[in-house]
Length: 197
Image (cartoon, rainbow, N blue to C red; front, side, top):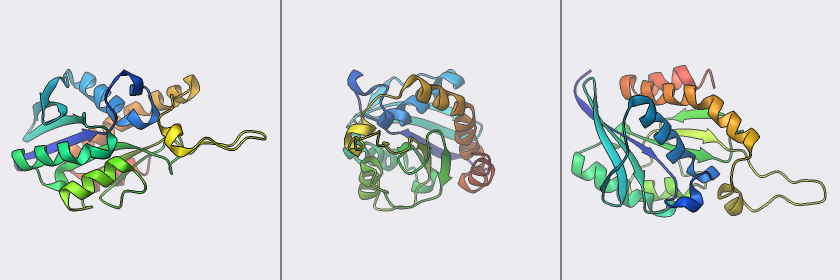
């Protein structure tokens, strides 16, 4: 494979209040991926935390936008423009309400599906054609005699210990999905990972 530049973006909100919320699973995954590779996401540029590493013939960036979710695209666009990264080489890792808890799905492109971070990236890149790694957080469930909590509150709520256990058990496959994308591209990663998710 020829030399290329790949950007893996984990979506979340900055600050201690959001660290372990459902909406921050992109940050959690990227931190775990970096730990597995012996990397630290601690450099700052264009309102983002990032690190850069050479993986074989690939120049790899890991990026956590610090702009808050609904402005994630500002930071992603700056990195793509400056480092000449094409949208097909950008993998965005984010939470997904429409997938059951812990289910993961790689997709080649698509609309925002109600996700404000993805919506911002689409607006700033001017295209829907960038890969995503969706991680299911499920939808809020109604309890006896009570309606479910609003979605905006749900995504900013903490995982329960049981839910955290489910997510932690999926991290091996999630890391494998990112590795496959970096090494083989989205088509091969989708064919391999989606069938096992």
